[in-house]
Length: 135
Image (cartoon, rainbow, N blue to C red):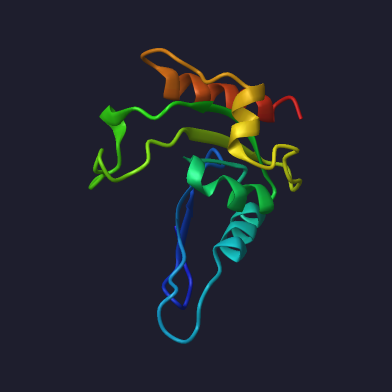
């Protein structure tokens, strides 16, 4: 776990999974999320997963989508309200330093079918990890 002097955080698991990206944008001095991700890749961060609403941001930061799962209400984030909040796919990314040819998540969905089944998230995680070994 890394914490900036401005209170932003980012964590990297031993396997390179980037988690807990949280830029503190309060006050006069602000950290950018993109600089946090760049820092994470220099410290061994190689992959992440996120809701589709963050697709373009991660794409611009050099993360390419590998696979995805459809939203599952059973794993909705705390405070998620069905009538108000979007049910977004979870996309599994790997860091390549390049922007994906898919500019929008919908283009990616057309090219790559979602992983399905009871253990879809675990399967998608494994597919993404295996893709890192074949770069």
